Image 1 (cartoon, rainbow over the protein chains, first blue to last red):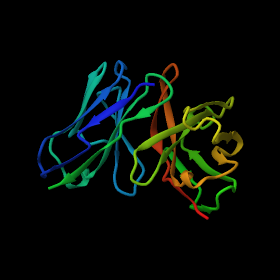
Image 2 (cartoon, chains in turn orange, yellow):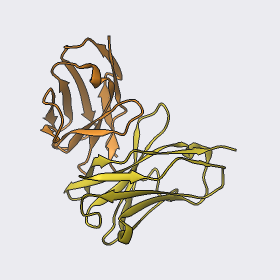
Image 3 (tube, one colour):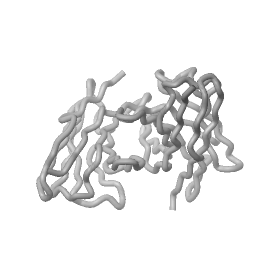
Length: 107
Length: 122
């Protein structure tokens, strides 16, 4: 099975900072990658699909890029409500696999 | 508005059976894939499997195959996740989610339920 590895596992940044999270697939997955945000105690929320397409209703400060094996999620200007764990997920074929998550905190 | 509403918290003993539910509304439940994701305390998300209610086509993660059963009742727009014999290691939050199918055999969740906490303890 294809493994998804995220980095870093956790990070702390200041409000207004640009934040980047990376996700690497053990094999090429074209652009079949999604990103999710999970705030503490809440259900996950779809942010990005197709590696770079913003889900309806998601703020434009979130963006995604990449294809093949290397992907990034960028938050252009960190806001307090962005405190959450972020997961990438590949969907080129079953079984679905998530990355291990990146925990984002505010300094 | 797409909504998925899950059944309430469960507390069970090892060896007991359990069936939790997820009711979808605001979209065509029968012709949409619905699946389940496990979230254990302090761990990441794990995909359990999905079902296509129209014909009951079901797919499981190898990690959960044989341990759980996913089913659906089209008449009440509800999907189910069940265990025949719970173990303490099944304790987790279980989320249901509608899945998009943009590529053959490829799926991603777009709308999620609120989660059902399952506690298995003697």
